[in-house]
Image (cartoon, rainbow, N blue to C red; front, top):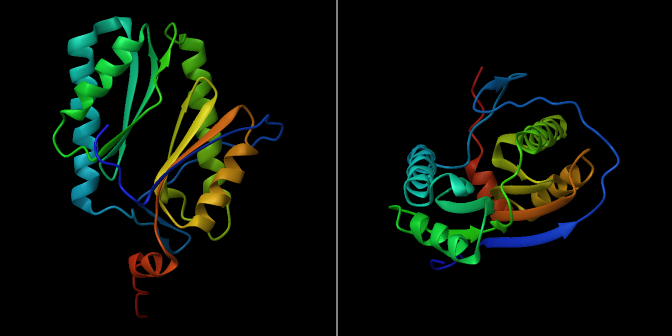
Length: 204
């Protein structure tokens, strides 16, 4: 794995879930008069898209259909989730993605087991939608500061957030129906850094 960034935290916690939220997601739009803005620069957003596309294509090219690997990038920090048949394939997938230009670090959460079924992946997509809905509904929380990925009932939370936001987002995920475990992969920022990122109020 490439050099870790000091602000990056990886916290693993599991819990059984009982409550549910209604699915809904919003991002990069004006909602209720509030401008929802991404905390990454526009360049970082484009770079994350390139990393995900390039990483996914390279993994398919080298490992083919025997693996199911999802490449998720946020601010050039990459999360690998899914399934591979062997430890060798797990390491190889990480090495392949690490060669993609501008990748800063990799968190390898690939499981060594058989590929998930279409039904499992559909269930994971539904769970991700529920978590995103909970983030949208949360008061005083910018939902688009979070990136949500779910694999086999485990929900991964990424984003540039304060410690307080990380704790709120984690609690929302833990209270979401279908989430079996929550893994936090955050780039933590201070309250001062958050204030500096806030858009200036438009004069009327």
